[in-house]
Amino acid sequence: MTPGSSVEPSPEERAAFLKRFEHFGSEPSAETYLALFHPEAVLFDDGMERPIGVAEIPAHIRSVLALVKGFRMRPERWRARDSVVMVEAHNAGEVAGKAVSWRSVYRIELAGSLVKNGRRYFDRAPLLAALDPNTPSVSPRLAPAASDAEPLSGAVPGAERGPEALVTACTAAWANGRPEASAELFREDGALHVPGLARPLGGGEIAAYYRRLHALLGGARLAPRRWAGDDALLFIEWQGEIETPAGPRAFGAIERFDLVGGRVLAARHYFETGALARALAVS
Image (tube, rainbow, N blue to C red):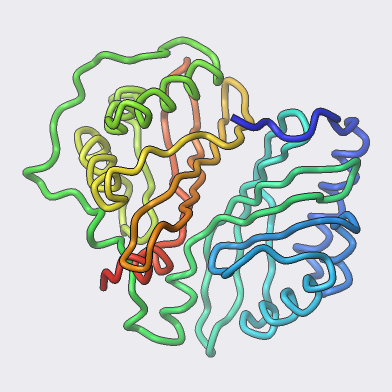
C-alpha cells in the first residue's frame, strides 16, 4: 500500500491546511478553494472523467457552486498518516430548489500545508436525483435479502489489536476473494452504512452486503492504496479494476470505521453508485 510522500508535514503545516480547509467550507469560492492547492496539485472527484490540474480547478469549483446553491461543507473528523490526511465532512446546499445534504471523505496528500494530490469520495446519486428522479444507482443491488443474512461466526481476526492489524485483516479478506470475512471484525451490535440504503446494516446483513458488492464488482479484489487512523477511528482507501461492457475501469472507495477495543462499532462506505451503475449498465 502507498502511504504517500516520505516527507511528513509538521503539526503546524497540517493545522494550517485544516484551518484553510474549514474556511473554504464556511465561505466557499474559487479563491478559498484554490488557496488549498500546491502549484503542481492533481485533483480527482467522484464523477470526474479524469484528474485535473491547478489551472482547471477554479472552473471546476465554480461549476459545483453553480449547481449546489448555498453550498457549505463542515469538516467533522480527520486522521493523518505520513503525508496523508483523511477528512470526513458533512455537506449541504440546494439543487434545483431542493435541499440536499450528503457526507463525504476528502483524501488528501500534503506537501507542506498545501494539497499535492486530492480526491473526494461521496455518492452523487442524491444530488443528481434532485435533477432527475430516474438517476441510476447500484444501491438496490446491494441491499441484502433476508435469505442472504447469516449469523456472525464470532471469529474476530485482529480483535483487541490496533488499526494496522485491522487494515491487514481487511486486506487479506479482499485478497482471498472473501471480503465478507471483514464482517467478523464488527461487534455484535456493529452497524454498516451503505450508499443509498435507508438504514444501516447489522448482524449477518453485513457479510451479505460484502458478498453482493464483491459479485457486483465482478469478483474484483480491492487493495488498500492509503490509510490513516488510530484505535478509535480508521479510514481505508481502496482501489481496484472492474470489468465493464466498455472494458476495464478503475474503481475506488473509502471505508470509515469507528473502533472500540479493536472491533468495529460503526462503519460507512463511500463510493459513487451512479457512475458504477452507468459503467456496469445497471439501472
